[in-house]
Image (spheres, rainbow, N blue to C red):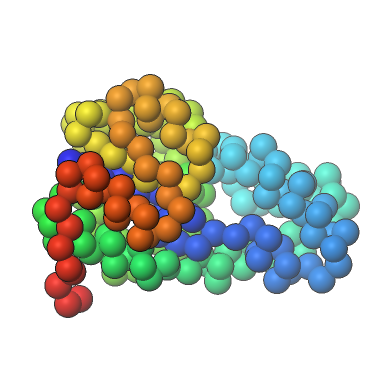
Length: 204
């Protein structure tokens, strides 16, 4: 079985409200930034690689009336919030040590990739698909096709782990099995129900 992990919310903490709260003390400004930046379609375009940080910052500043320099603080805060989820990292090691191929399928802008790749456990993956490198972002059906085609994966022998329900349907339509991630413990249970034999991890 090929095991495909999302990153934000699965292997790394991802809390947009924490990011905004770190940067803006006033509730009204937090709401403006949430709606005008993190929840705005421009963010998805940045994930696809269509817009740069600079373009997204400028456009968000124009929408919200908040100076661009303050909007930039949001992007600088992201690495501090994208902290590894240690229990999921442990699960990752279990899957790898059990001999199952590991892959990444993640919506991620270009500027964050070097930070993500600085973590040693990221070397455990046999292949990675990042939205910014494909021009597509989940739940675009094409990004799932790219995953299967690039690494010659059989859909019925592949399981995709993601914390957003809307990202599961395109995978299921292509015959990929899915697990809605709510925690490392329940994820391991679901993998074992699918027949994966996961022992205790060796010391790392």
